[in-house]
Length: 179
Image 1 (cartoon, rainbow, N blue to C red):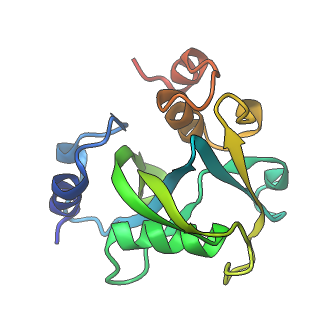
Image 2: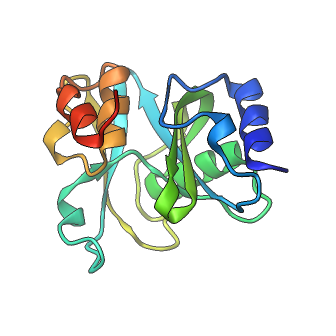
């Protein structure tokens, strides 16, 4: 399936994202994009974030927090990727409610989709992470999210949009050239 058609089918199931840095018509159907899925998972008005293990390619990554997620496996539906990655990285099981963000990373030919999820089962643990890249999992209450320690600007914007952080996104928008 062509990338735009694939995303459109996903949007039909989970609704269009509130935030995106591209339009479906911007995608080149001749490119074989890789996809990733992330889950802003909540339980009792708290959000779960992960901290990664040190990585020589990304100095300092171990000091930052992320929305859990990762790359899609061959022939895996993106919603299944999101739930699998959340389970592997956090030990938690969720239902997906809607899409929040679709982000095109052109230099990597990668499309990342962030879902909103509701935790329905599980206990926080990094034991299920097959790659052993997750160092820590933690719940944060509203406004206790360590905004300045989030690794990705897209995570910052998503958490502010969903009212889990009070960070200022105006500088992020200006720095990234969005208008």
